[in-house]
Image (cartoon, rainbow, N blue to C red):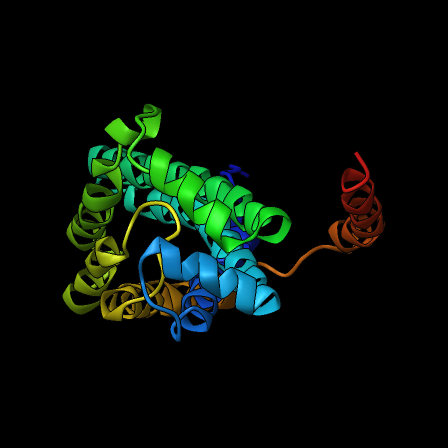
Length: 233
């Protein structure tokens, strides 16, 4: 038996879960204007809602990584070069979005501790500062269309769903960005591309063995305890 990461169950599950989490996160931010001063004001006025939106968005972003790797495995059966380029560009773009989310979290904490006015002033002073990912933003824009083209050429996705996947590049990039119409179009396109594929893959996954079920049930509580312990340091 040949093993490929992340495995069929995780690959299929994240194809379904990641787009749904991302969609929930961006919809929760819908009521608030797009640019960062109003996003920081929203954090001050609705801290629970904005924290939930942020957590859902970054969780969806992180879970897209194994989903994309799993998709690349299928594409690579017939189009290995396109699979490599498409997945690599998308993954770098996801790393950049995770980096942005870390800055967002720091800004949210600043609002809670120092107030929205101080937070807005400090963010405004450093908003255009250069960093490594400043040079890699093109991967967010180029990665999804490249992966979509690869999926179409390999027969993994049909033309409609490949086009839907390509629209994911419309999701705005950068720090402390809210939701606008193109955000919804992008993530709905991602859902249209990934959800049916995830469901299809789940239907063909082999049933888990008794040994793997026992191992999972044993490890899950330990992971929960480690997750809690991680918050203490």
